[in-house]
Structure formats: structure tokens, C-alpha cells
Image (cartoon, rainbow, N blue to C red):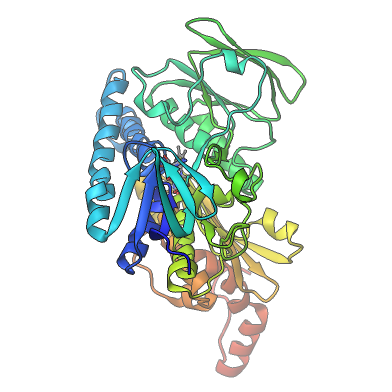
Length: 483
Ligand SMILES: Cc1cc2nc3c(=O)[nH]c(=O)nc-3n(C[C@H](O)[C@H](O)[C@H](O)COP(=O)(O)OP(=O)(O)OC[C@H]3O[C@@H](n4cnc5c(N)ncnc54)[C@H](O)[C@@H]3O)c2cc1C
């Protein structure tokens, strides 16, 4: 048997790579982790989840201060935002988390960490800074970068992406955001709340294209009410640098040509897998525009080279990266064959209100040709929402023809946390009647989970048939008021 330097080598020290490295080393595998940048942590820590959620929190606090009167407090004029202070807070949160992703910690776990640009020289070996390292198995976990559309003039026009947006020198007076996906929606609302005049241009007919249109439209109406402007069904014809301002020429859905101007252009049209310059062509690992081509055990066209995280091009979330890392560990290290199953993978867009989802929505159910019924409950009927002044949004429960839950979408306060009950229900195949009969503490937002199931059951429980049966058996006297 060939002698390799390592049992497993991992390219990329982000969410997926770190999870594989920590697991493999703790299982006793000789593990090599290679990161291109100077520190570990990847996009989630440095340019993604952590900075965006920190920014969103700051924007929420500022928004609440400006709306103090709504809570019976004296009105407050907090003055303009100094973005360097905001960026400083973002940086300090990153620094705290970064400690857990240090080279020393991974070394203690038993993994060797190397920094630099690696390139495959054959199916089992890479060259890194002049040295060659071989491993029995490899994992490509190099993540993704912001995709930049080939718009006329954009290459001559300064723009920012999620890589720059968290460390700007000052708060932009105005910003045009290209794309209306989750990254765009979260950042655009945060900047709008901090005082930037935000305009979003989107090619499609709704924001958050994978979500059901009714939920996306509901959210968009809220964002519009906060002062953001949207141009849907709009094609960008050109971008230009006008010096202190940038111009984006748009043909909107009505066919009108609009010359939009702003201090900054934020490009957020999706992600592209980082697969360039690692020599994949020379070792026959197949990939396309979406990412690496894998089987359900996350093996690429070279069975000992695995993919995890954003490189798979499937669900580009940190929790998906962690899940896929577990599948890779099982297949490559423990040799227990495991396949990916994304049926119950939840996700959340952290706008205010948040939009969380698990399983089928109406779009996906219809595309799969499934029959379903929809049950809803509004947050304005939830007492806690009213006390919190957070009554926008609703929950949507999809049941299949056998009345089993196949998907839930929640647009509302803390939706990302509220969906966790459904994570347990869906994964544990818990019966709907269990959710309906389980006592939830009052007053909580989570009562909405119970209430929506109640809406389904009450049509059955309080039916004419049941009423008649009770009347017959127990001589109930019927209505005491009205007809
Ligand atoms: C603004 C924003 C907000 C987000 N918010 C959320 C959120 O709230 N929740 C959520 O679940 N997801 C969120 N995401 C997505 C999340 O960040 C990614 O899905 C996650 O980071 C993917 O993990 P990964 O390990 O595949 O990639 P990464 O974490 O990016 O790690 C890849 C690593 O590989 C390194 N690398 C690249 N090329 C090479 C090479 N040739 N050799 C060695 N190393 C290399 C990179 O430097 C990087 O460190 C957000 C993304 C963005 C952009």
C-alpha cells in the first residue's frame, strides 16, 4: 500500500475544513489543514455570518433608539453613525471567536496547520510553498467568493462586496445593491437603518428568489416601509464611475430607463466556488459553474477526494458546511458510509423580521408535483409579539396529503430560533398532534408553532359532526348566545 504523509489533507480552513480537521484529528487520523489566508476561520467568521449579524444588531439598536417614542420613552436624537466605530465592534467580535479557530488549538487537537497556496500535483499530493505533502484522502473545502456579473462598465467602476462592506471608513450616504438575495437583503436593511439611502436592483420578480413569493413580498413591503427602494424585474444596462458617485443604468419592469446614482455599489448576486488555481483539471476532478460534482457521499470524481461546504455549490450555509463535514468524516475516516440528505436542512435570512424555512415551501412542493395544504397563523395574534412591538409576519405550515408536516416557513421576530422546534419535529418525525397538545410557556413567540397546528386541528375537533355526537351522548344544550 502506498505510504502517504497524512491520512487526510484538507484545503481550506473555514467552517467545513475546520470541522473535518478537528474531527479527523480527534479520531486519531494524521491530519493536515491548509489555509490560503493568514488566519483560520473562513468567510463566515471574517466576511460573512459573524460580521453581518454583528452589524445587524448594531443597526437594530440604532433603529430602536430612533423609535424610542413607540415604547413610551422620551424621543432621542442619537446623531449620525460613525461607521468606524461600528466596524470596530465588528472587528472585536471577530477577534473573540478567532481565538477558537487558532492554529494552536488545532495543533493541540492533533492537526498540522500550514498557510499558503497549495496546488495538486497528482491525485494524492499537493505542492505548498515549494514542499510536497501527500495524503490518502483529501477534502476540498475552499469555500466561495462573491460572484460578479459581467455587466457593461462594472469592471471600470469601483464596487464593494461582502469582503469590503464591514470595514468601510465611513457610512455611505447612499448605496445601490445589485441582487436581492439573503446577503443583499440583510446588509441593505442594516445600512438603511444606520442612515444610508438604499436602492436594490433585482433581475427577478421578487426578493429572496428561493422563498415563496407571498413571504418575500410581505418582507419587501416591510423593507419599503423602512425607506428602502426596490427595482424588481430590472436589467442593469451599464455601470459608470462618476467620481464621488457611481451610476447604474437600469431598464425596469415597465421598460423605463433609470439612471440610479449612489456613493457605493454593493454587488451581492450570489457566490462562486473557489476552485481556481488548485490544479483540479490536472487530476480529473470534475466541477462546473456551480461547484464540485460529487456523489451523495460527497466524493468527487476521484473517490478519495471529498468536497464539503460552499464548494459543493448546494446549500451555502455554515450549518450545511458543518453537516457535510460530518458526512465526509464518516465516509473518509470512520468508514461508515453516509449520504447527504438535505430534506430537513433549515435556513434563515436575518432581516427584521427574519425569514426562516425548513423542508418544502409551496414553490418546491409544486415543482415536486406534491399535493399539500397550507395552514397559517399571524404574529399579530401572538400576545408576546404585541408586547414586543414585533407583530409583523406569519408562520406557514405545509402538510402533505396524509396530513404530515412537509415544510414550515416563518417570517417574524426570532424566526431562526422558532424554526428549531420544527427541526426537532421534522427530524424526529414527531406527530403534529404532539406539537398541538404540548404546553408552551406563555407569553412566548414560540406559541405560534402550537397555534398554527391548532388551526389545523380545530377545524376537525370543533366540527359539526363532533358537536352532534357530544350532544347525542352527553345531552349538551348547544349555543348560549346568538343564533
Ligand atoms: C455576508 C454573508 C453572510 C452570511 N451569513 C450566514 C449566516 O448567517 N448563516 C449561515 O449559515 N451562513 C451564512 N453565510 C454563508 C457562510 O459564510 C458560508 O456558507 C460558509 O462560510 C461556508 O463554509 P466553507 O467552509 O465552505 O467556506 P469558508 O468558510 O469560506 O472557508 C473556506 C476557506 O478556504 C480558504 N481557501 C480558499 N482557497 C484556498 C486554497 N486554494 N487553498 C487553501 N485554502 C483556501 C479560504 O481562505 C477560507 O478560509 C453568509 C455568507 C455571507 C457572504
